[in-house]
Length: 533
Ligand SMILES: Cc1cc2nc3c(=O)[nH]c(=O)nc-3n(C[C@H](O)[C@H](O)[C@H](O)COP(=O)(O)OP(=O)(O)OC[C@H]3O[C@@H](n4cnc5c(N)ncnc54)[C@H](O)[C@@H]3O)c2cc1C
Image 1 (cartoon, rainbow, N blue to C red):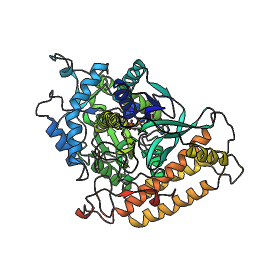
Image 2: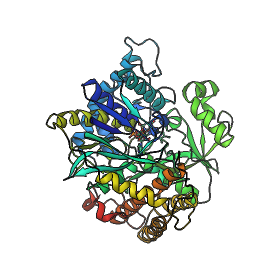
Image 3: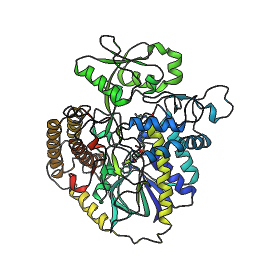
Image 4: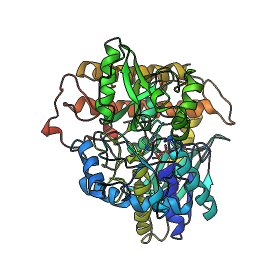
């Protein structure tokens, strides 16, 4: 039995586990892939902090920029806490060895950290390591976790939380290598499983597994979710592959051009506005391009080497000499697990949540670039320090294998012969439905129709068996379970979008184009609103 069980090895999970271990707790991290495989490694542009290096910047200005972008849907106290913590987080990262990009002739190492512009920021505030910021942070945190001897259990897929009388006792997992269902017991559990923007299959910058598994486990266990309809669309993904071209490309001076060679929007406006402006051009049968040629090869190789490599690898475009064809795609989920000010999951005692899977209410209706890496580290650490306080009053827990038995029986049932389905075609269908009917522009009719289609796919899945009956490393089984969770999240997203009869930040309803003060609150949903009721 562990003091703290952390599910997820992204930035939120690793920072939670490090905080727990440094304070003497018995902690384990469980993740579904290899420990370094997460969205955090994909983050390119930077992490925001008012370090005092940039003239006129301050934690107050960082707070103000964040609140402005949130469109009145954030918890201002939490935003202030996050922005105040930011310089300390960067100092901590600096101390454990994150190789930030530097400026010359600075008096101290902290003052030498280079910072760049990101959309919606009043000043250059994003600290970066070329355009590999997330990768460098994640690998450094992972090194620190190894150094501390934190136990890491990889290739284990979270199935359900084990909850008795609304108290969380740990979670059940599918051991991917053996297809066995196992319980892991803990005095407290931190869900740090990342976001759900990957459900827009084919129209997302996210990795395949970013489908909201942890969110669904919370819903199933009696917790709730909020603001699921608030999904951010990133303005610049590669037109064919949906691979991200970081905002730092515009932050460093890149332009957006349409096929008439015209600039049509201020490139550094918040993401929702830039994404809608690009979408309008595309709807008008114009192509849209990112132009960074004028920055010159030397600067591009120094500041944006990953962008150059990704353009060449995925689209055969050389941005040094060619325009980059782009489109906006789903990128980040602002909504997620409903947590209180201490990252406690509302409705489930002993369960905490941090990172993109939680709705920490710091981004509101539109996240600022560079604020997510900050959020996951600030609130990953916070969730852990709150879990440490919680376990002080728990002497022991009694194992309860009811959930394990139920999950084992469900997994066994999937191996029995039933209807045959093609989950890859269904995933693709899900992405198309979401992008066209619950995407950048939404309306009541489209959302209702999308919900009917998604419920029908969920029904198909409920009567289906697996196409691969192997009991060893059955990736099909994992993807089947992921699709089921993706559909649950999709349904909650659409229902939230139907309920929010207004436009706010990333949520744009063409039938309700104005912000309405009556919707200046979170939309909360729970199991009875979900497909798994
Ligand atoms: C391409 C890209 C670029 C980005 N660039 C930036 C940027 O420059 N600046 C910025 O601030 N933000 C950026 N973001 C956003 C940011 O990277 C993410 O919001 C953040 O890293 C999420 O961290 P996390 O720890 O919450 O989740 P993740 O890093 O996604 O980690 C989730 C973890 O949970 C595990 N997990 C998931 N499901 C299960 C399950 N069923 N069982 C067990 N384990 C599970 C995963 O294996 C993984 O270990 C970017 C995102 C993307 C996709």
